[in-house]
Image (tube, rainbow, N blue to C red):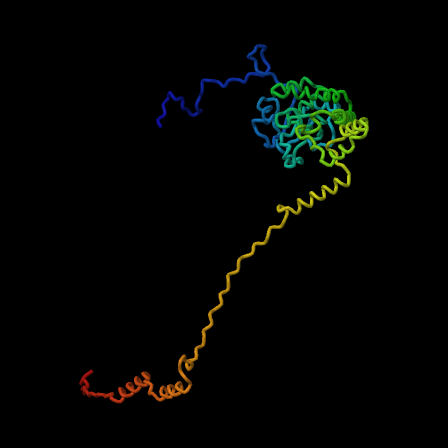
Length: 373
């Protein structure tokens, strides 16, 4: 590489004629092009990395510059919204929140046990009272708030609804969260101490339980509470029809009363009659005796057939058909007197004769010793 003087290479290093631009201060200028002002609240979080970055409200707040991230092991001096806390947040924590802000734990509700609670937190850890989530993941579930909803609830209870609206305006479900919990948040904000918030929460839960019981009682004829209307109770048995025919001589008033009683009777109620119990026992017995509930038969391997070995039939050589006993004896005498040729004996005799005719020859050769070695 060849250096030239025009490249401005010198001992002092490269000198640039373009100075570094100064950062534009936030909040300066009244025009539309002015940089966004710093939020009035202070928010922070410990990010565990459990959530999907596309759905995580905490990561979105940090990207927008509305919340800062805390490291594991770093303590926070303000109000900390944590599911591991022992006390409930109340308006008494307003002064501390205004001074140091609020912090949350960015984690998944399914993996709460994996959070190192001993390494995060601070002196003022608080629980949130009963509130309903409006986010897309846990919509309609109580106590399942995400980061932005937890911060907004903390701000509202401590008397800063404007902060809550400011932090929720960047989310589609922000207004829905405030609308769903508007009455409850206003009641919490009107309390003074932690005991008042707990009492308000208990009264609200009792009210919800009572409304549920009343709706069950009043909505007995409601099609949404009686189950599937397409499945009506079966018609009466033939025995009941015979009894009705035999009782036609009775008064019409009694028949009307019986029909009214049957109409008022709950079709899903289980009767205590002994006949029904016997029928159920019979049905149960038939089911248990059916093929589906029987033990499968054991698979037996077919044993190969045993074939008896044929026994050799002993044939008496002396017993021949058409011969008398005296003739057999004469024939045996002739056979016994006949000379039997033994090939083995003949070979042995030939071998002995061969040994007798063996001859030997000897030769003699004289060799003189050498005179000198």
